[in-house]
Amino acid sequence: MTIGFIGLGAIGTPMAHNLVAAGFDVTVWNRTADKCAPLVEAGATQADTPAECAACDVLITMLADDAALTAVVEEHGLIEAMGAATVHVNMATVSIDCANDMAARHDKAGKAYIAAPVLGRPDIAKAAKLQIVAAGEAPAIETARGALETMGAKVWPAGDAPYRANVIKLATNYMLMSAVETMAEASAMTAAYGIEPGDFLEIITSSVFAAPAYQGYAPAMAKRSYDNPEGFKLALGAKDVDLALAAGQAKNVPLPMGETAKQRLADAKAAGDGDKDLSALAETARRAAHLDD
Image 1: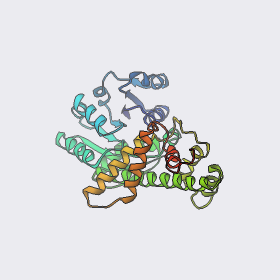
Image 2: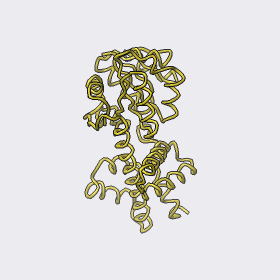
Image 3: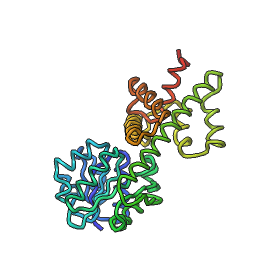
Image 4: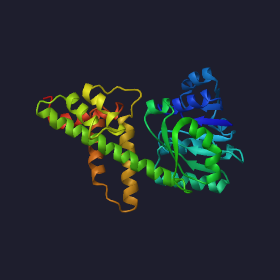
């Protein structure tokens, strides 16, 4: 199987490495070209343009947002460059409007398209343990299955319409933002009574909230250290909450907890924490409680 891989960010890079390590013929492209070097050393081929990646069996895009995906598709004629049997697998977190637009563009061109966003942080991607939610026509998913199963622990089917996978991804990230925000608030409350964050967080993540959504972010909160290159960047979390709120509004679904998370994330970004791990929400909660005044 030949694979084109576009987008070598914090999660895309280990995903591509796993494909190369599994023996796939992988061609990579990234806007910052030097990010391709380690993959080339591992055995991948570096493309000069995104269109060169499209001459393959499975074309994977793992880009930051709607704008980045749309720019690559429009500016580089990505859909037109796809082979007649190529399957485009969009694995990024995008809005529902963008998801529907991409599906329509591919359908008009007679090209196969599926959405397969991932659940998991960069460390999970490195371990090839991502949970992958895939939606689109069944034959297209089957064509891509070998690549998807190489990058993830499980592929979850979500129906024939690609946007369905994106809805599930946005709903999941919405829940994650809410979970981390409430943990940050609870940690601030206990700290106000003289309880060390690490003591409180160890108790809850070993008992009532012994789940990855909490365990993955508690250590950074306990140490108050948030510069984690393998974490989930706070600014991306803010973007995903905005997308989830827009999805809810489009169907008249109130998401009141999301509005709170949106404000807290905005406060964190205003304080300069946008490039830090999502667990930096703990500092936003501490500032609101004046714990370090």
